[in-house]
Image (tube, rainbow, N blue to C red; front, side, top):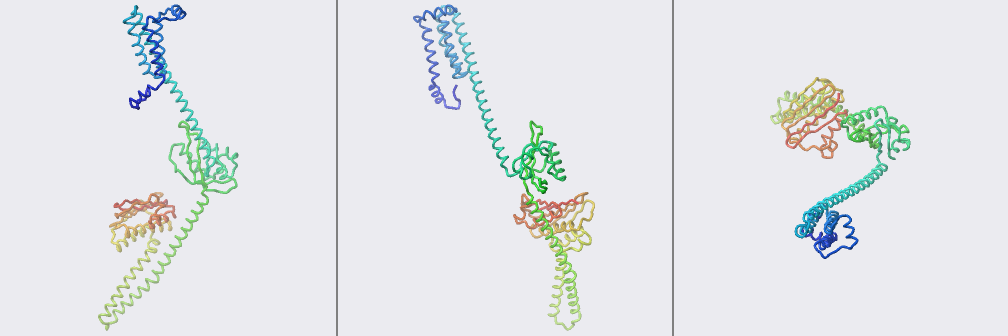
Length: 489
């Protein structure tokens, strides 16, 4: 009848301003006054009609009270029906009890009018509310339909004008729909492309990937959100695609696949070229290190050995040498020995002889022993699994990663110890370097290492990629750092 959220005075003011209220009050007034006026009479024709249907004057007047009751139901709902029925009862009951000659009949008629009026008024209020809800429901349906139409138009516009190729295929690989970008990507006209099967432009290796992806999606397994795939254009040119595949369902049942593809051929070739140049530069660097290490060992160290021997001979043979000259000679002997140690360490750092002769594990054992000697760090090495030799290039890369990790620990982490662990499994080898240093917050992506100034870690990451390995970094401030490299072997 009124809005409960509004203040009472505001509700009353709104109610008073409604014309229907005054119409109902007028009807009650018009029907009540004649009901108590004996002087009032009906036209002869109306009186004859009431007699013919068996109604007395006052019975007809009581029936007229149905009009404002039902009208209240239409205008003000259930509350209006209850209130108007109460008012009608108040208007009729005094005459029925105090004035009417036939009190029982008058009370019965009063009760009947009140009950029937309340029922019809309530029914009309309920019907009106039901009609209102129906109209609201229809309005919501129309609005939803319009929104769906707008969404479909928007999606179709995005679909048709997207720069990426978008295809819809059924569960058997038949293309149901495609956009213009798909036609440009594949080289087929759009009307020909729709209806083709994806097997017609996927090479065998790509088909295996597509079948595996299809199988995982249908089984509800997770897949990489984006992955690379190969495709052969109509003209025979091979392309590399960055592909996203989603399963489309209807009431939980799979019905189709949606594919979004982007041509990354140029990007892939640039990455391959960059990887090739990086590999060539790394191998050239290692060859140069090997050459310098050999020259230091075969020439420089040997010459320093000869020089040291000559100084020893001079110290023995020069009996007439003064005490000051003898002290200077001993200082030269010490300096020569220190230089020899430094050059020998440099030669080993450049290319450990143990790595070429004995393999990765002895080279790492030497590395840790040497680290303890010059840095003061406590070290340990643990090997699990069945030891085996790896390809020369793989052993070299793994050694360089471990060497750089241990060097970073000594220079930057303020650690007291470093532990190295090697794990051999049937098809993998992993090396972890763990320290108890100050730690740091690693970047979210390994690709951000160089940008964050972690050049040593970035170099390790690139070296691992050269042999198809994976490098991960785990660290927290105050909790040390753990670097893990894992490769298939």
